[in-house]
Image 1 (cartoon, rainbow, N blue to C red):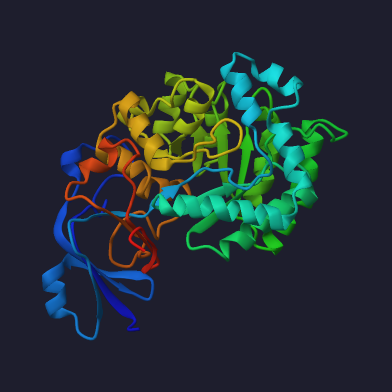
Image 2: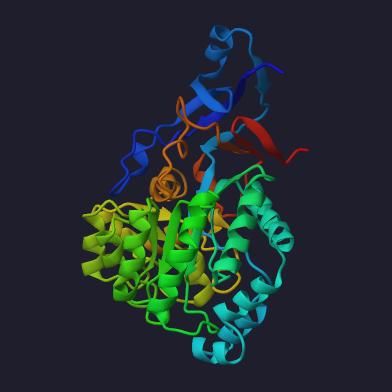
Length: 415
C-alpha cells in the first residue's frame, strides 16, 4: 500500500478551523468545504482541498473514493469518562428514580464504594476486557480519543491495577485512551486515617510510580463536601504540579469551591460545574481553564445542566464530555448528550461541535487533534448526509458510517 492516500469526496467537510478557543461561536463562523478531499500521509493530514483538484496534483497516491453524499467532521473527543470499572450500578439507578437519596442508596450498599468493591475484585484482565468493549462502542459512535480515569481502586496497588489496565487497553484498540489518576475520588472506607493522611500517602507512594511507568501525566480530584475540601486538596495538587503533572478537577458538582481551586492551580480543565454561580462563571471565564460540561451526569441524576451558555457568554471555553460511568452517567453517548445539552442551554451547532472536537482537545492539553488541518492527526469521521446540520438535529440517533484514526479506516458500517 502507498504511504499517501486521498480520501473523498465529502459533500461537506467541516474542519473546525479558524474558530476561537474561548467565547461564543455563531454557526456562520463555521467553514464548510464542499466536494472536499483529505490527503493522508503517515497518519497525519497532509492537505485538504477540492477532491478533483487533489486528484490532479497528487502523484503516486492511492485513492479511497467515496460514493454518495457524505459529511466529514474531525474525530470526536470525549474528555471525561470512567469506563474502566468492575460490576454494575443498575440497582442504584432504579433506587434513585424511585426517590431514594444518595445517602439512602449508599447505606443500602450502593454508591461509589460499591463500584470500588467490584473493581477491586476484578482482575486486570477483566478490566482490560470491559474497557476495550466500551472503548470500541465509543469508536463506532465516532469518538477517536477518550479520557479514562482511575478512581475506583482507592489504594496504591488498586489504582495501579486500573491505570495499568488502561495502558494495556490503549495498546490493543484503535482509539486513543488518555489516562488520568483520580485516586482522590473519595476517602476509602477501609483507610485507617483522615483525608489529609490518605492524600499524603497517595502522593508519596503512587505519584513516583506513575512517572516511572509512564501511566499518566494527569492528576484529578473530587472537590466536594462528601470527598475532599479545597484546603485538603491544596498540598496534593502542589505536589502534583511540582512533579510536572497536569491538573484537572471535579468541580462545583453539588457545591462550589472546586472551580476556584482549578483556577488557583492553573488546571487544564474544571469538570461538572452544575452548581457554579455567577461568581464561579466569571472566575472561569477570565482564566485559561476549560469548563467541561457533563450532560450525562445531569441526565443520570436528574439535576440541572452545566451553565454552558452563561460560561460562553462570559468569555469562557466549554468542552462537552459524557462522564461515562457506572453510577451517575451510564449512557456514554457523546453525540446524544451534546445535542441534548445544546437544546437546554441554547448552544449553536458550532458551539456544540467545538465542545466535542478542538475545545475537548484543549481540555486534555492536546494540540494535535480536534480539527481537520495540515499536520494534525488524521482523525475524522463520515456521516451519510449532505448537510452537517442533520447530525445534531437527529439528537444522537444519527451515527457515523465511517471512522478514520491516524489515517486508517477503523470502522466502516458497510462492512
